[in-house]
Length: 91
Image: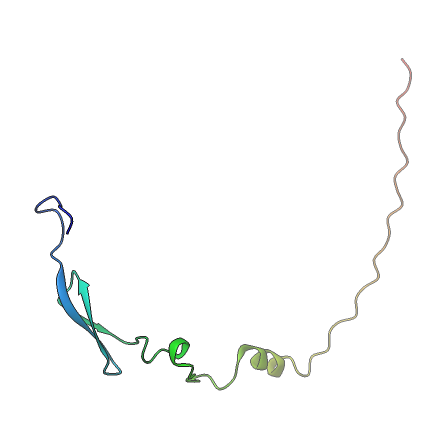
């Protein structure tokens, strides 16, 4: 254990972090009670199971929104003639 200056550090507790799914983990923290909404036991990244709340994704919403819209025809680009170079007169 490291020697620390007295009276400047928060108290450190051995506590149990509890998840909404029912899992609990023994950890060290400056808080006595820790409650979390999601943990590694119930997070889709770790479990491989996805919970789809939104039935329609972003791409599908975009395609549905613009299904009947046709893109405008592009206007032809006018080419500018290069300006004549000015020559400096003799003095």
